[in-house]
Length: 382
Image (cartoon, rainbow, N blue to C red; front, side, top):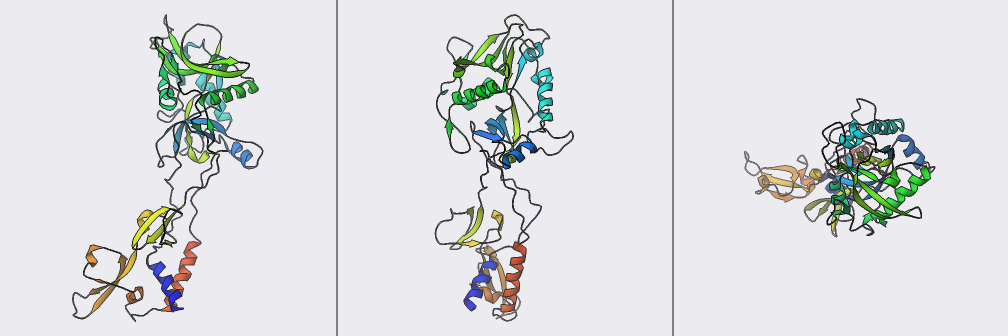
């Protein structure tokens, strides 16, 4: 019985009693550029997916992730394309957000329940498209270079994808795909949906020629990702500088948006971190990585609370031959002249262990553990 009580009180001595229902997680999932990730676009999509009636989500390719402290990730929204006329000169010479195409795109997403209500302070799916920093934008040649390694073709204004057929894009299940695979997958969905425009390419933001006026100047060119189609299949793709012609021809629009990471469809558990005492060294590490000879400390949810506490016996500064007892962090310099003794010696009244006190503390610990609020799980893609 004494041994059991010693173990329980020893654990309690190094376990801070910390539980907060208001704590907001900043440990968001992180992505690599080029990852293929499906995100829920609305409550309806999420409910349909979880009910098994829809495979789910909007397919994207990750463009930029600011790390695990950022709730949003910038992604190319392959699952929500549209077609618009290249004869719309505003599309060529002004910011995409000033065009009718943008207004239409925003209206479509709003009707799908993707965008939050006006004045909302939190965005469960896509960030407000009007936002200057995180809002909708057109993909650029710089994006194609940074994410897919596009390089300029010798002697022309065009760009090529040297790694077009290399399977270096990973989805959330670890399956590898090439950029050509992705282009063909988008094209097949486009055919199935009966859309118009993608056969003429995907519009980029870059232009050649003066874009400051209200008319398209002579020699003006716009950039687009152009497909080679063979037997209704994408067999090649490159970025071409296309000379503008005022014809009623549509082109594909696939924008870049910022998406809430918690809308990731893939149901992968968030890594669990635990506090361990290894000898006299406290470690707050991912569960299973602590190594041998370590003892788990329950009830610790923050790295700064993972400490090794001991009982110090210190000579009294006022009474000779008397001592004071203090439970505190191991190795603190102010206790350099003190002796480390058994935890039971910190009961200053008796110097012995009180089983009534121990059972009260254990009962309190069990009660507190029931109040700890689980951290919100991130949904992942299929």
